[in-house]
Length: 495
Image 1 (spheres, one colour):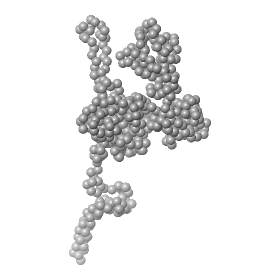
Image 2: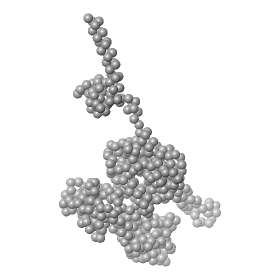
Image 3: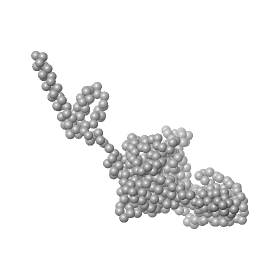
Image 4: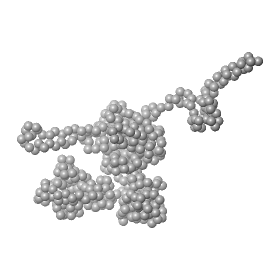
């Protein structure tokens, strides 16, 4: 009797050993048709059953070599050829206390210009050779070269650049089309999505890192005036600037632009400019525009502080407060008034004034936009036309000459279009500096584009012609007032 029972046990054990591998193979081939059976057999293979299973209903051990060897390699092969290296160089002016002194120049010679270079990355977004990178990579560069992933090197031309957005567009030429990365919809990103960062960190060569989207709509990170960044923990280091942030569909969702670091290396906090802004900027460059035009509605905005939110009976400080409205602009025609709060744009909530600036910049001139507005305690919806900023009275640009601190500065009277070009509030008036000769007294004295000259030696400056006459005075003493970034600067000097 005992022998028969032992024989029966051995037979059952042999059958079980034969069934389990067969079950594994059948499950690997037919998992999609019977997910319930998959869970049961997984639990059995783990030695658990029913409610005591600890692996969870959506977890299981991998079946087959294919599942164990999942890789980003196909995605990298598809996108990496469109990521390029950008080399920018410039000749820096070096000053010496001996310059201009014949005695010391006889022994030490004149100071020689010194070459400076910077390294970054870029992304090909058009097969004709359109490359998007960061403004700070090519800022003040005399020469910009682009090296593709296959080792070719090209001289490039800067089509468009904008310091406020930290974006620049380059153009390279070849008789063959270039590989590109399609620009995706950055608004479709969610926190937790997988992303890859591709660039050339520290100049070691093209490198790919993986991570997730850590946060969206980050602002006040001190990189540029733009305040709507994608945050990721994919490793980004110096040299990655201008590189690609791609999603799992192989689409460009951001341009890597900055890191938060105390050591200079990645600590898992990197920022990228959203691809929807990149698309709008690249389209402007391909259209041949001399600067990135934003839609104009004739209104200026301020941040909603907790105190303002409380005074308006708002639950939270969100949206953008209307500070001024041009009576002849589209916003005034639609009924927008100072004191109103814009809560959403085209159905997308606006958490801050930075979000409004970003949303506006990505819209097309010549279309209409729907604004949800809180006005006098009531919510309303306004359709406002998005127009091109008006040029105002056509005033010629004047380059100042003579023996004055302003010599070498190019000035013009402000209009909404000129103010937008310089990244200034469109409601500002006056005479502003639009460009400065690098080797001029104006540059040496620290004048900057965007400075508004208010007064020179007691003369109020209302027009460029008045300023041109004021700087021709025969004097060595200069007293002037300049407005810069909303601050009034007064200076007295002898020159």
